[in-house]
Image 1: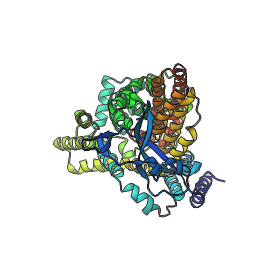
Image 2: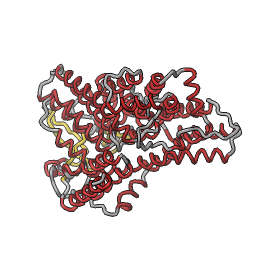
Image 3: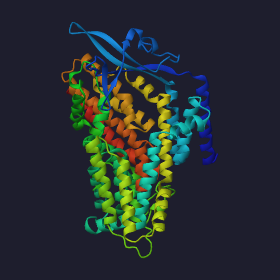
Image 4: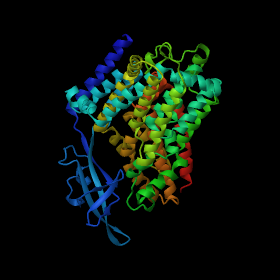
Length: 578
């Protein structure tokens, strides 16, 4: 059987199995309980703070709730409502006290819930072709959900969303257009030549510049990945740094550094999920944000990940995977930046400079748009609490185009550069849109919920941080999102950590909960980083010109060593909490 036929057979079997599951397996319903930090306004109305805004609710006694967990847990019948607010009266210190919860009906198909993610990842490894693989995973999920109108019930609802429109605007038009204009004006090449002349003396210093920019752009996620990748690629290419090396450095200094230098949107987002009733040091939003920052020294994976990229940058790695070592040797000896048969996500239109005859590039055409981009992103973050990336990239694009026209470039050449930029990132944008779609499918099939149920019971206290790490690594790898994993895992992990600390009479329960919190944070980051269906993984490949699966395969061994060291540290520290 030829490799092509074998891959087709795997694809067909996966879809048939998904169809059989969809028509024969009924979903299991469960209820997620989220403790609310409830307040009362002047009129006596109850509310809680969600994403910085008051959200009012009207609870019913839990005994009257349609989603009463005692009745709903494990049910195969679809509930009448999917969300409910309830009140629970409990005795606290001899006095009755009222607690408030949000009940959310969730469902899963047991281990079959993981089928769409497994299909997508398996096909990625077999075919090295992410578009087909993601479509395969989406088809699998649609069949499990019995949605047979693939375009009308799956693709169109997913693509007709704000997040999908944001991908098209930011990563196709604004990012692609900016990279295309920089290629046409020669600005990126001028910047590379300046850095090479003044600072860079070879592959080591080129990688060190990449690492330092990753630390400086500490906003994390897509912003950091795009800024660093597009900035350092021309420098690294000139110094024969393989695209696998560069993608690893860019990816592993994005989210990890964002959790270490957390002056960004992360604390405000995460704190909403970690309220635990009766835990004083998590009582208010201010307390929970302070708790986030207290956890920073214990985010061992992030520390080892950033340290690992630094050591690779100076070419003194503690560990070097076989594939990454081969990539380094190949690029240094032959100048070949990609492996044989690679399919880089950055198209040939963006690989070089296409300066019109008679036009003289200037490095300020790179610096001024970049400075405006960073300034607007940081400024809007300071003012609004989150960076307005569209404004930042839009202003940079307009500035780069305006400077080119002012220097005498014809409108025809400028538009041609813009077109080349769009063509250069079309594939990456398509993959991002498909990644968003399969992320929604994975959420609907309930794979994360199933994993939480399986790994969340009867855990020895000293193993809890590592088990939470493993659980979130699997969830994030399967779904391609760290923030989505936080929403699934924290409502279970934090109450569980508090209950385990109390059951074992730990002397330092706050430290123990800090370890568990850090394990969820870091496990989610690892899974997101290493997943071929993650947006940051795709963007790291796209902005550095790397083949997606080459990036995944060379990054996993390096990241796994950091994760293993982190697991050892959490286990050792956990013993001192007893």
